[in-house]
Length: 194
Image (cartoon, rainbow, N blue to C red; front, side, top):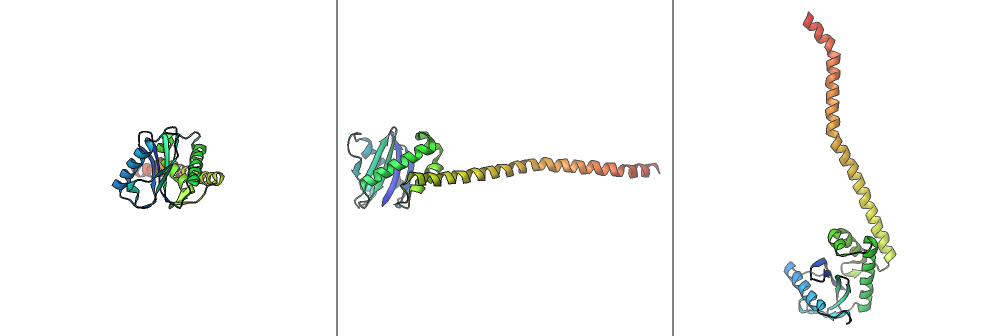
């Protein structure tokens, strides 16, 4: 089972954090720091598996990670997960992000955090792997994007109609006043003359 998914940059700033086990915020921050210190000191030519730190619990936790450019993708897993399977899952996650953002970079993770979490939820939910087929993941992500665009279009139309409503109301009142003045003008003049 996956206990946590953490993406941080070369300076240790977390860009994506998802815990599937309950920890307080202070414990989560300590875990992130501990994982960063364990992984950042390692050479790129060594194995991508590390035994978990003391803050991750008393169980036999492993850290499976990949270093891409300026980002570390770290999955904290228990002993029931295959290290090579998790490495493949990291690769699927990164390639999916790459397809969605066209050459994903750190800024994409910062400015599109909602889309990144949606992609992650298509792959893994509750610590369990849901989908590893990238085409299936992309199908669901594209369907979500279409839904968001249609909602945005609908809300923009409603907003445009709502913003023009006061102007239409004022014009209608003016037209009513002009019509009532024109229709009542002969009566008004006759009363004045009499």
